[in-house]
Length: 384
Image (cartoon, rainbow, N blue to C red):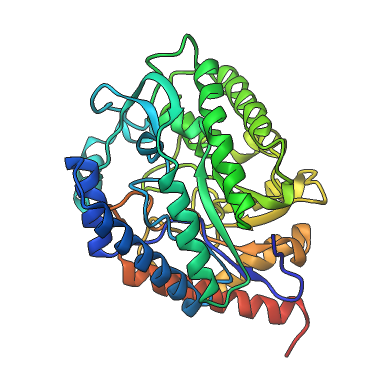
């Protein structure tokens, strides 16, 4: 992957607001199970080209396909693999929201509804459709060939976050389920890298799942589970060089108390064991901004690159470029400017048809990211 050799590069976590027609087609496919494949393919191809060009215009250096073709970052696997069904799964209420029913109502009114299906694993997980991944790779390759950027990455879910969103009702144990998921995801991971792209694995299971999908565990059992997730993930990555991989860690892309979030210091030792050169994490929201000191006080391996979130992705404030620059410089002071790529806390379009940041404001935020990186670069490299 490209790193910040002569200036601070900019990126984001992956998902971006989808156009009205893209969201309409994804939701039709999700909710009705019926769609015109030729129309779907044509719209997605054009939309990926548009979103890549748009990122470049905003000043983003390391771009993605916006996760355009996916209904959601953690549930798309049900469309590509067999073994999922049983009707919609109702997840437990997040621990930080349980005592605040009024706020849950406010939150539901403040953001567009989430309409994706949450199914369970009810049979063997096996690949049933390779064409969707092939289309993603081809669409992104074409878009990058027509746009000048520094680098490109594609997202893929971790086995653990899939298990958190789509729980096991078939395999004899959680461990067996994770291993089955990793076996099919390994092919996707390898295909992304073989296509010449940086692979980003989304791993909210290391953080968010503590107070969501795995909230019934004790801390000790949670740490044991996450250590197992890391071990299995590394096995799936065994044929992929670390410099081709970045992982994303977050505590949930929603506005809320987050007072049950597990501290970064508690999970960092496990995160650092994953075979990935770059680590993307939340660093801007007020529940986690202070944790830059955890990186300062930890022994971060010299080969790790940090992608700190310097923009909050759950509020409609537009961060001032000077604030962005200060956040970047803070991390540059910890690991060195060449090992920092400025990023966002999470995605702006985690699930199709559901956003908390208005698309035009998301653009302003990303533009501020680029402007702040330019300010930080001038100061860090001693330029006028």
